[in-house]
Length: 88
Image (cartoon, rainbow, N blue to C red; front, side, top):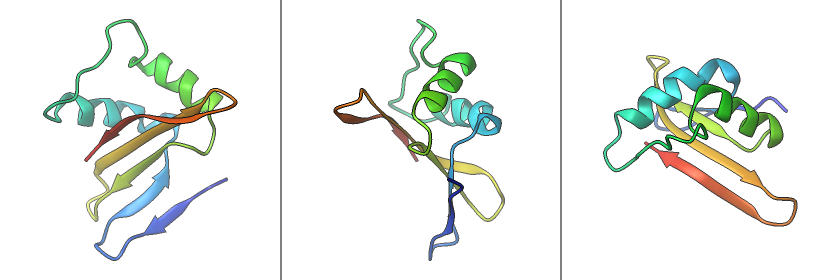
């Protein structure tokens, strides 16, 4: 599923893809109150594995300058849905 939605406030929501991960990690590193796991979960490969295991559930928000200004990382265990990271 390919989702791209323009919000009224000139922000765009898109499904998170592998090409976004470096920018998402940089957003997390520069967002107060967010810490990254050192065990590999928050590495590029860890996030790729997560979004591939949970397709269509994680999103980014871009501004008019095409910068990622928000993210939502979601998944499930087959029974329960969870969101693991939210930043803006």
